[in-house]
Image (cartoon, rainbow, N blue to C red; front, side):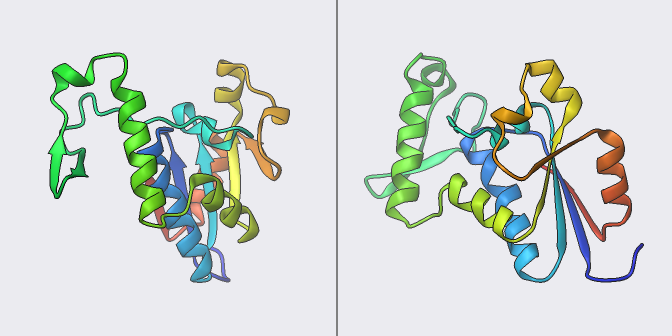
Length: 162
């Protein structure tokens, strides 16, 4: 490992609203603690770097998802979660809950990551696969491949797969 500040790397593979929070919260927290942080966005995590986000929440197959409703914490049965309106409803409920509780938006966390010097790496193979270009991404995104991630991970004290 190299000398200097401690390092942390993350592989970000999921792009739903609920899965977008952990990598950005951990990355910005580590950066605030003096870590040098790199985030490698691949497959469904790559859209988190797009200029315009359209993040959704899906209760389907997520039995742990229970939202506070009327003083209770209610889950949605998979049968209802399959209906076309379920994702939109779950997303609206989660966004309202976050707004009401003062939780920073993903856009705000992403901006904090950029401002903190977090290295944001978009996977070149995934960009090619899904037809994204550098112009589709926010400012400050670096494009790299698996070797770019492995180099960063090899120098890191903490490596996370999210």
